[in-house]
Image (cartoon, rainbow, N blue to C red; front, side):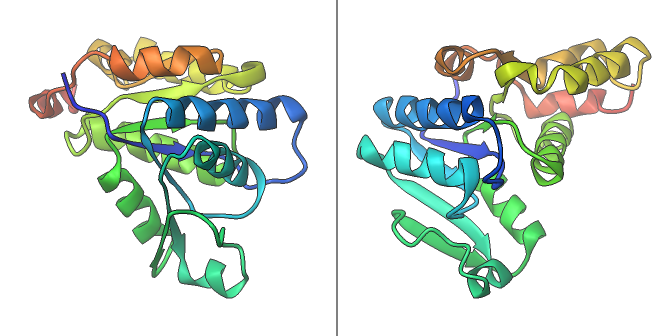
Length: 195
């Protein structure tokens, strides 16, 4: 079984979202911290990102944030996380977050979060990431996306084996179990990327 030390959390930076998402982010940060996992985020000071970071730090967990230089110029970085790593652009941010991660958890978010999730799934399909990817479907936020992924499977845009690329948690209590019990994904399975 793959050893899990670093969990990347992709999520929204919006400050105008419903409280159920904020509560889930707080619970997730605490759960990851209580399991002695280092949390990797986008390093921001707003929205669910800030909530996850601060909840994890309250447990004594390390939080590493990866943030592009232009966001630092806007003062969007969290000044109190364990380590802030500044990169050139959004692509570098995403690449480093994925590279550092042993597992990925995706909270609700907008286009940036969707981009991060779909790239992570694609990298895993191609054999460039082999950790668990857990979609945290709070308030049924990702129902439509999950249905779209199922349509891709049903219509053979993806192979049946690709249904193992991700899992869906409906609440934060399910996340740790899904991280530690995800089916092992061999990089050799990338040969099934073309179906």
